[in-house]
Length: 311
Ligand SMILES: Nc1nc2c(ncn2[C@@H]2O[C@H](COP(=O)(O)OP(=O)(O)OP(=O)(O)O)[C@@H](O)[C@H]2O)c(=O)[nH]1
Ligand SMILES: [Mg+2]
Image (tube, rainbow, N blue to C red):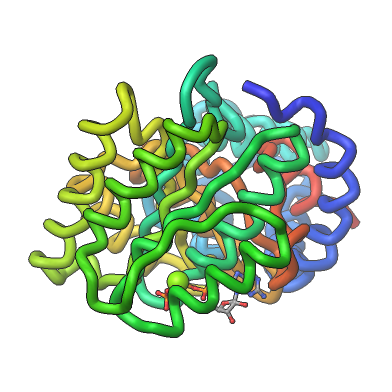
């Protein structure tokens, strides 16, 4: 676990998130307003809370959970503004995860496989992740296993050149699993610390493409013991609740270890993060807050909730 060295970077970037979260925060301010309520908490209040959480895209599951907790704690009680702190604590608990960032292995390359639907932000997130690892002194290789489009290989090549990291690729149309195989061999032979595998965007409903993803995963696991150490699912934050349905299928097929929530800047659907965590029980490990290579932050539940409720 080596993200502690990046806490500074993280804090700096979180001010970007604060700006990026502007739309989401507007919606959350309607919830904050509700908590200035003074008097007896009744079912009508709980209904209103439920409505506002739902409008903030928190999703059915997380909304129910919060409303139930507030009901248990406050129904028929007189309150005087203390509910806000209570709900913030509940929201933080809902998002809390035991493992943040990337768990690097002690020896041999740590393999990070990245998957998601078309255009979710996979390749850009890989560039950001590569930079994140480089910042920790890691020797990083990327594998261009999106062989579906020529432009995809080019896109990753350009990023790798900018970042000064190694890339393993093959011609468009070649077998993505063989590129993965090749990359594993090279990463091992040349003592790379991290290998990040890009994959082609696919719909969670495209069975044959989901199988291909599983094949890449199996090849990687045969080459390197314990690999892939992380399978990160990139979700587009602007997709809101739809992202959850996609995520369920990916989770089933490739057993994801965590989520990168991309495009959190410029969406009002930042509340969806609660639904993702609650419904899938997958930790949000990183959030993407822009198109640049530094626009990635290790996700921190406490800070996120605080920012949502900040004036
Ligand atoms: N604003 C913003 N844009 C992002 C972010 N992440 C990615 N993008 C943009 O989203 C678009 C798609 O990103 P890609 O990284 O190419 O997505 P992908 O999942 O690799 O796409 P395919 O390989 O075609 O499936 C690009 O224009 C990116 O610049 C983010 O965090 N914020
Ligand atoms: Mg891509």
